Image (cartoon, rainbow, N blue to C red; front, top):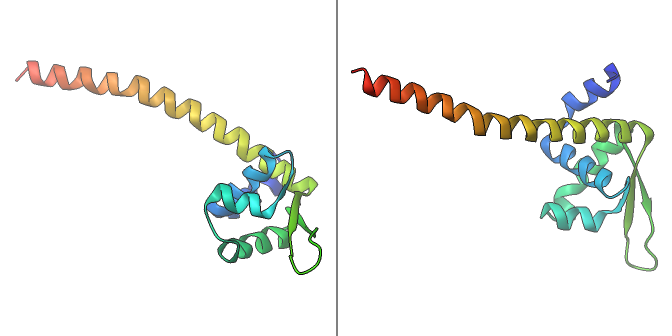
Length: 120
């Protein structure tokens, strides 16, 4: 992982991370309304995150609406794709590690508990 990508990842908020992951899962491009629906937030609450991601060079926003209705499509930039890929891979690794911890470590604690209980 390049230092640019890792430093950007450390700067991201949870919501920014979630937005990048959702765009990545959608193939790198998605309508903003779909992001809001998936995340369960209103566009007014989410737009500051989109603006920050745009300023960081991670995504580009395009107006695709016509008439009075303004609609936006966002797509990941090359840097945004690299960051989202790392986030997605790291998330997969964390799920595997968490599963491993939850299935193996409790057994260890249970055996310690039984040992302590039986040797009072």
